[in-house]
Length: 329
Ligand code: ADP
Ligand code: TRP
Image (cartoon, rainbow, N blue to C red; front, side, top):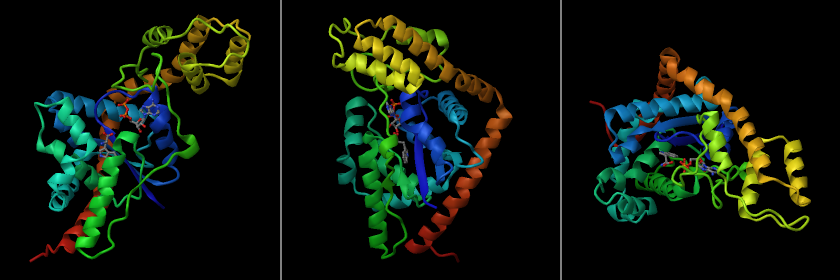
């Protein structure tokens, strides 16, 4: 069975874009692949969180992914910093990662722009740590968004280099996981583009109903169609895309008919959309609250994940050390 691995940022809450663009697929993939999902808390240190924030963020992310349907019994769900084999592999990979190529990565250049006062070495070697994350389980497939494709390419480069330097065929070449037809883009409701944390237009799974209603009612619209079957342009197209994701086919058809005969009132559509989002998010939001309070359940999930992840990671590290030439006395 192929091994699929995905790293999860340890900051920020899940929004509908993350859910329909990634998490929903992860939940399904659990039954089809050997899955590793981990919270990338080492990576988050590049932005210097406080100790309280570091812990609370990890806990929150864990609770949200569990509530959304990741099953710690089926997949290996763990916290990166619980697996000391990862930083060891990172150290070893660093010896064959070159400063020049690291300086040229787009994510690094972007970070320099975003945080010019904190250009730390962790940022420079971020792709090496990410390669260690992937290679420690000799993963075959990695689902990544567009912004992480170059980092995945670097992971392949480091894997290939290791194989070449030591004349072995040890590491697999980790390929991007392609969701194909299942890939959905969740739009934002502020006119154009996608829903995203940095776009500031997220509707979060843990948003209270009143917050969701407010966000949806604020959605950008236009003056309304003036001709029957008028071609739909972006702000309205986005509303309908979200409606298709969240509502029943009957509801979609109802509003589509009204749009096509120019009798649509966007306010009615928004009200319905908000209620359907609330219907969908409420059980997840309640589950997040329940899990966050259940320290025993959380601890059990975390420990199970760490144990499974270390079993796989320690095997890889043992092999790698042997290939490099470390020998026991
Ligand atoms: P954000 O910073 O907005 O939370 P990330 O870039 O961290 O988003 O994305 C995490 C995952 O969620 C990625 O796999 C990405 O493809 C997916 N994702 C994020 N926003 C959307 C969206 N609007 N539509 C579809 N998928 C999305
Ligand atoms: N860098 C990824 C992000 O910002 C998170 C991540 C860390 C990751 N290590 C990974 C993703 C390994 C995939 C594989 O979203």
